[in-house]
Length: 315
Length: 241
Image (cartoon, rainbow over all chains, first blue to last red; front, side, top):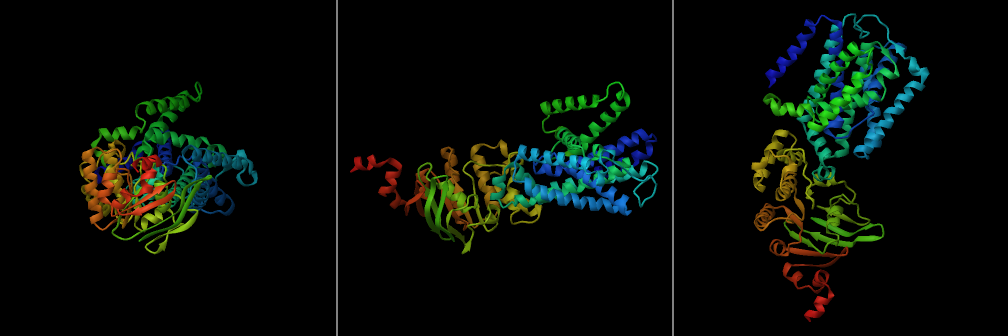
């Protein structure tokens, strides 16, 4: 299995060198970003079963924190990335302490409200965030500024984040934390009766999930060199990431990545081909895919794949 | 070992437990019986921290556990099963039990080994790869016990692990419970099947309407007037005399 994994990673590493077209490289970067983000959302929603619709806030906190630190203090986004991550972790822990007493739908609704409020805050707090006009990042290729003239460095940083995301999921799945989160998801009382500190393990999941989401938010901001509420903190970001994970396979190691690999190409191809004649067509396709998957393979595509492909059984 | 002192629990104005006290020594096998709604499961919930008692205190190994959470109480070695089995449905049986074993074992490998030992003990090893939700009632009850045993308890509360079993399964379960008792785990058992209770328990406590109405050896309990009244009604006693 290790050998196969290495081979896949090697292929992914060589692939960008073969693609000469910036359009496809852009698609690849977006797959990596969304794959990694879906993976970090899955830590809380998949393993602990706590579906959050407020992860747009963490993504946005990452994007805004690094950008503001760079614009106001000249701090390198490489450091801003971790500051944003830590800030999102703090916010996530507070959100967890307040909302973890809620179950399933109620938790989702509370986080939805939190995500919406964070969006409104980003729009209204003009002195800090620049409101709807957004903030432009300096375009000055330099490693310190986390800004590059070619797409290749972004591809490789994205790939690294993508692989780290999968690695963390794999590590969680094969650790006490993963077992405990699943126990909580399946039955809270039974888990507690067996000595599982359900409050603590969920907070750990929340911390990991929000930290990673913010780190990816920073990377996204650096890549699109522009931060505004619509692109980094709108509520649809949370809905979209949930969609990717549910279709790909919620609560699995590779499901979130597979979700991104299915949806991102559809989106960018449709936008390129039909963007002018039928804008929004990709949303209709999203809906159709979701309905079909939920009807025929409700556990997600990865679970079906795992049944068919022996090598995936151990993941 | 376990000391329950003056414990009460009201739901609204309804006293489900009314100043109940009892003590259990290491190595005991104590049965808890009583008509439906007598407060047996509520007493278990209070002892294991799922409910909080409104009066009195509970001590385990001389340590007060009245205000501890269920997960903390389990880590002290006091474990329980649920009347309605609660398997982790979408997790294989082995992993179900490993979650219990992780209470003591820090590594997954050791927990896996321990889980297999326990599964072998309760006779579920051949089903270790099935998902929890695919087990029969009898096997769910075994899984409940296996998960609990995997936490290495010194005191084990069994809540109706025999209900819904056929005669053969019943016999196997009785043997298993005897086995558990022989491995120096103190047992406190809720059960409705009197024949089994009489054979298994050293001592029986009877609850009725949240109050302890009798306590003693099985033979004493069987002839206790209060107990007969609680189960069969006053008319029965009058008729008998």
